[in-house]
Image 1 (cartoon, one colour):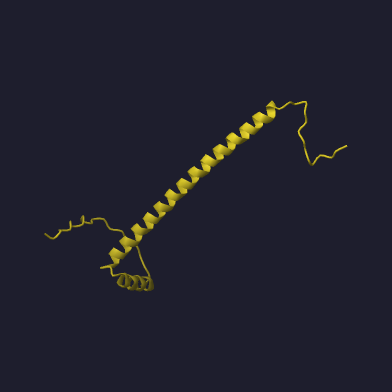
Image 2: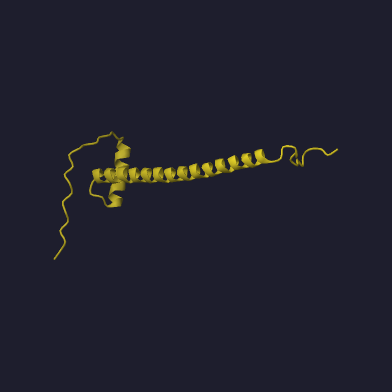
Length: 103
């Protein structure tokens, strides 16, 4: 039995913007090359593809910022540990400083 496709939801909202004659001709050409039925289909497809790519970039940025935050926390813990170790060192024993001049 053939599968019946559901009808798309009716579109009742309108988005409008102005184009120059050249922009309109260029978009109509691209629309034909893409095999889309209308300029509206082309604009709708382009807008949603752009929105998805922005969302994907935002998600990637969020993941990278989370990773950076974890690394900074690890670095902060390491620095705290180094400070604690240095603070517990025998203060009467100076630390070797290879840059300091020897008498």
